[in-house]
Image (cartoon, rainbow, N blue to C red):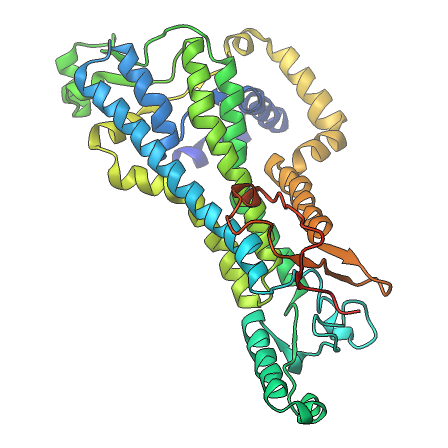
Length: 432
């Protein structure tokens, strides 16, 4: 006995005179609805994040007149949001402090493109390391190993100055440079892929929030199905009274929209910018292949803190509300229901068949991938502009590093804003 799908196909073979038309009509219907839903979107919250809870829970509490328990839960969500922002901001500031402050005092020059063409060395650009000698795989080290070996050589020369030439000949500290330029590019791409969804959801939430009705609508309601008695519905579905309580995104007063933009969306966007600024600088300054691969994924841990805090600290009632929170659709399918089949097929033939090439080009590359391709070069080029310069042989080498004008770390460093101090003694100067 064939299953339902196979049976329907068998029936089409014998009964339908034009199966191609039937298939195209079905696809036209599906695309009409699905593309409308995608283009218009719906207002939804991050259901497993303190950011989403900080928007939804106060609105649910407002909808039912601020009862004591809900007032406490709303206060809790803001407290968790504050804790999350502080933790994420603190970690990013410390990451920025290491890159733009402590590394300068340690004398760590910018990696730029030292060793990028090491396979073609000598004779290619970027073959001269920061120590002034030619790079090669046997002499390639990470910064910690290279600076230690350099210190050992310089210490021997300081103790035995009369043997300086012999020490230079016999003691080779090697050079500091990239292990793989291609791996660096790929890891930057992976890092951008992992963080692009966060900024896309943030900007989309802002857009949809602005298009949400500015009315004091209710985000909670008690809804019993009209097709049968309540007791019968319970027995059929195995439900209890809680299943009749519905939570869903609805209209929001303007003052609450302003609060959510200032308290939730803006801090979330700033943290994302800090992470991307610090993350790209950190990856561009990482020389080792293994370190690059691990760091490209480890950096995104900071963005997952909001989900971890929500999962560990949030109470069961809030988790239930967020799990069952329904989206608010911004699209209206009623107009599609009124369209005739002839108009539908005519539009489908024009867009999907006659102008097939244009439609393929428009839909072939996902929007998020386009964002990655556009945004990633910006941060890579920014790193080179702010930290490197060209030499006569087309090599990209580090700018001179100067000790910061103050021994207090400036938080703006975490956003990639540097403060030059010309005239100060450089902590490291490019070799001539």
